[in-house]
Image (tube, rainbow, N blue to C red; front, side):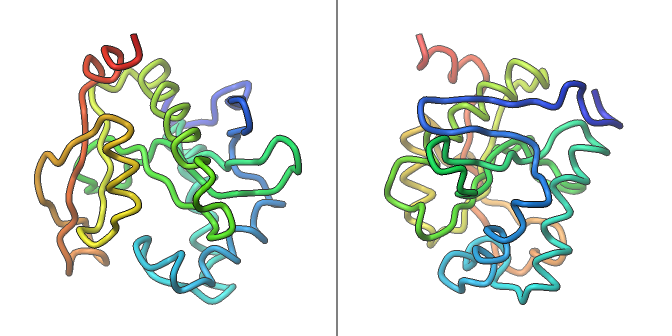
Length: 184
């Protein structure tokens, strides 16, 4: 329901992960992710801790204002914050996106695919979306490979709203029907 956090707050469990609304204790992992130039390259660039704090607050804010946002992705075994994945649609965005970003130590373990799959399912079941996109920098080979594994394909090239309007992104996506046909 737009305008307030759903009650109870969503919590998704997969085989290895917990996806939940971001909490204060997630900030340390988030700040580490945004402080790493390689990790932050395709998500707006690296940020010092103070700027990372302001960026961190956008997801809890999205949950409160829009009723959805990216989930914090937590390792069930260790309780460690691995990254974020989930529905995302800022003002001026090309469409209804499920995006992802993960700490470098989480790369190569399949966490992003597991979390994105759960988040896409949740978005289609709970938000009434008819399609999902992923805005991916044309040089971001890892995210392109994940989008392909999720069943998405390039739909078009677009420009994001300022301050990210200098470089084009590839808009990958699929419809609700395509998603569920693949799941059957």
